[in-house]
Length: 136
Image (spheres, one colour):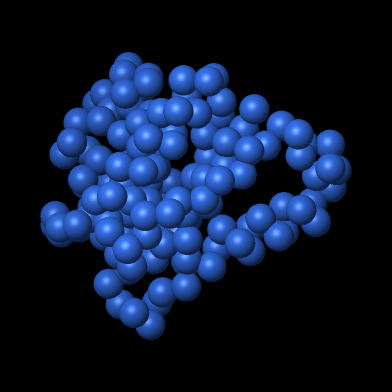
């Protein structure tokens, strides 16, 4: 089973004019349904959506809990964001379930700016590294 968590969140993008990532989960879902043979996969996918989108800390806790629930059932958990900050709670859950794992992060820029609080899309990777969620 694949658990897909839609996370329509882009409030951690500092420049308001660059926001729009919150629209991505719905767009990706729609495009995926147009994808070849989607009907064959429907019974293997659980689609859920994050609810705590107004409070960053609550959202991260909700994402972590959803991911931990999925991991405990042996599900592959996929997050569809949103800005990069949504990765934090999902990474926290993954590192708890798989404590000896590592992280490979592909992006056009480093996401390692100086620490902000709450983490933004510009420093989420630094927050993940500083929290020692993964082995070095």
